[in-house]
Every structure is written in structure tokens, then in C-alpha cells.
Amino acid sequence: MADRKTYHHGNLRQALVEATAALIEELGPQAFALTEAARRAGVSPAAPYRHFKGREDLLEEVARQGFVEFAGRLEAAFDEGRPKALTAFLRMGQAYLDFAADRPGYYMAMFESGISIAGNADLAKASERAQGVLLRAAGTLAERLPEDRRPPARMVANHIWAMSHGVVELFSRGKPGGRSPVEPSAMLESGVIIYLRGLGLIPE
Image 1 (cartoon, rainbow, N blue to C red):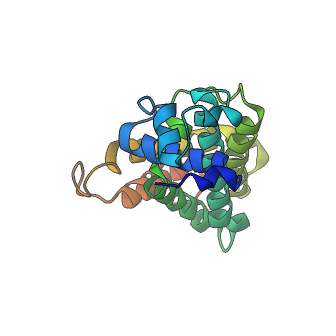
Image 2: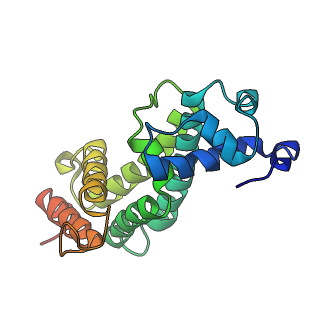
């Protein structure tokens, strides 16, 4: 547990974010209480209100920070399509799965908490940055096709995002091999390749 001097050092805001992410990982995004986050941060129940309007505001900040880190991981994995667009695209899929495994509290705040992303400008900006990496990647893959045959980049990005999220939800939670003998990373990679090949974005 963080000690009470955390607040006096000016780190209370971040201490609350980290405590909340840990609580979400343990209890789910609907079950955590602001008072428990304060207790774990080592401060009084009233102290969080110096930085957050309430529980929802704190949850949105956890999600925002998650999206910032998530976008950074996707950007590093894509690396502007080097050395090949498909290789880079598949690296992003692994980065998606790794983030969900490494930062489950943040991931659940981002995608499973029911927060309104559109209602928070900073949160929306962070989310759009992550989506932007997928859009650029989809556009890069489509460059091999004539312009009139290229599928909409946003459609491709959304489908890949949905596929990645589905693999996390269905096969990456719980014990390895508990729901499928196939590794989540192999399942996602094969699904992405089949999808992209069907659109003509990669050769047979």
C-alpha cells in the first residue's frame, strides 16, 4: 500500500490511478469503489476529490492513460511498416495481446467499463491516436492495390480491432489452453492473414 506521504509529494493523482487499475484487475470495472482506491493510495476518503470529480472521472483517467500507453506500443510495433507492411501489421496484433495481458486493469477500463469516450476530449484524443495507428497500417497494406480496389482503411482497422478484442475476451483470459489448444497469438495471426487475404491486401 502507498503510504500517506504520497499525497504530500504531489503524486496522489497518479497513486489513485494505479490503485484503481489494480482494483479493476481484481474486481472488474464496475465493482471498484472510490473509497477503496483512496485507502490503497494511503489517503482519506475525501482526498480523491481534490483531483477527480468522482468515480467516473477517475475511471476515465485510468482509461486515458491506458490508451496513451496502448497507442505507444502499437506505434512501436508498427514502426511505420518496416521492414514489410504485413510483418509490421502482425507485430501490432501481438502488441495488442501483450498490452491486454500486461495491463489488464487499464485494458478493462478502456474497453469494458462502459465509459463515454466521446464525452471526454482528452480520452477521445488518446483513443483516436491508437485507432490512427491501425488506420495507417491498413492504408499501408492497401498500397499494393489500385486505388479503386482498396477497401476503406477504417473498415479494415475496425475489423482487425474487433478480431483482436475477441481473441482477448474469448481465449486470453484464464489459464493457457483452458478454452483452446491454440495459442491466442497464433489464433489472431491466422485470423488476420485469412481476413487480409480475402480482401486482396496480401498475396496468396
